[in-house]
Image (cartoon, rainbow, N blue to C red; front, side, top):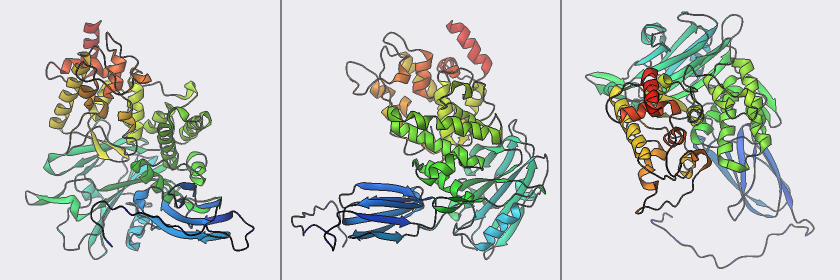
Length: 547
C-alpha cells in the first residue's frame, strides 16, 4: 500500500503479553554475529528505542518481545540490513552485512576482478622516479559507464605538484598506463617514487575551475589515490570531453617492501574475528564523511590502539573528535586522554610534521604534545582543518597567513579538505569575509550561539563551495543574531566568544566567529576598504597602524 501525505493509524487493541513457553524465564539472551568485524549492529525494540549497539558481534539480555536487528557497514550511507525477530527464548542469529562499496578496488568491494588486478599491479609498478623513499600511486577508473560513451582520459585534468606549484611529473596522462578493461571501459594507473613530504593534487575541471588538495608521502609508505569516475561526471566543452567534478576519491596507504613494491593490506584479528585493514580504513572514511561517530566495540581498539596504517590512526582520532563534539562538556577525561596516545603513536610512524596529526595534537590533554610551530601545509581531511582554524583564532602563527589565504575557499569533497584556486571566487570570498568583519566591528554587543556550529557537526560541511559560495555558518548568522532593539537574541554567549565585550570586540573573538586565524583580522579590515593582496607584510602593517 502506498499512502500520499501524512497518515494516522490508531492502535486500540493489543493481545496478551508475550511469555516464555515454560513460564519460568523472564528474560532471554539475544546473540548476533556477522562476517565483518567492523559491521555495526543496533538492536531496536517495539517502542523504537535502541537497546544495544556493537561491532562485529553483540549479545544482549532482553525481555521477550519483538525486536529489529540492524546491521550496517559503518555509516548508514554504506547500506544496512534489517531483520525482525520474536524473542521468546535464547536466540543466536547470524546476519550478513550489506555489500561493501568503495571507490577503491579492494577485496570485497563489489568491483570487477580486472580492477583488482590493475590495482595489485599498481602496487608494484613505477612509471617515474623524481625522488626516492616514498611512493604516490594514482588510479582512476570508470564505473557503470557504457563502453560507447565519449569519455575523457581517466587522468584528464590531474596534476601532481610540489608545494611551490611546480609539477612533479610533466603529464600524468602521457606517463601512466591506460588499460582497456571491462569491454573497453578505461582504467588508468601511475606509480611515482618521490621524496617523503607534502604534495598537492590539482584538478583542472570544465568551465575553468581549478581545485586542489593535499597529498602526504610518508617515508617507507605508498600513498594511493583512487578516483571512481562516471559518465555523469563529464561534459563536452568546445568539442572536448572534460570532467565537471572530481569523482569519488578514496585514499589508502601501504607499507613498502624491500623491493619497493607495496605490501598487501594487513589482515588482523579482533574479538569479532578477522578484519581487512583496507576495509577498516574505508569504513572509517565513510563514517567521517557522514559525521557518524563509529568508535565502539572492536572499532575503538582497531582505530585508536592497534593501528599500523597511519590513515587508520588519523581517521580514528578524527572520529574521536567527532565524538568529543557530540558529548560537549560530558566528554569523559579518560576518552580525552586517548588523543595523547593516538598522537604519540602517529608521530612515531609519520614524523612530527604531518598536518593532520598536528591538528589532532591540539586536542591532547598534555600541553607538551600540542603543536606550537607554524604549519607548512594544509591537512588531508576537512575536520583537521576545522580543528586548526578553531585553534588559530587564539594561537597566532599556527596557520600562517599565506597558507590560510591559499586554501581559505573550501570545496565540498567530504571527508577531504579541498579548496578552489579560481581568482574570481577567491575575490568574492574575501569581500564577504571583510564585510562580515566590518559588521562585527560595528556592533557594541554581539551574542552568537555555538549551536550554529554544532548543528553542522553531522555533515562535514565546507566553508563554501564552487557552486554556492557562502559565509561560514557563524558569520552568516551575524546580522540576525547581533543584539539590537529590533532583534533580541534568543541564544547564549559561548565560552570561546568571551573576548567579545559590551564596549569592544577583540580580534580573538572576531577570529573565532569568522573561523579565520587571528593573524588575518587586520588584513581583512584593510580589505574591507578596497582590493587587498593578502600577505604577511600587509598584515604586519595593519597591526602596526592599529597599535
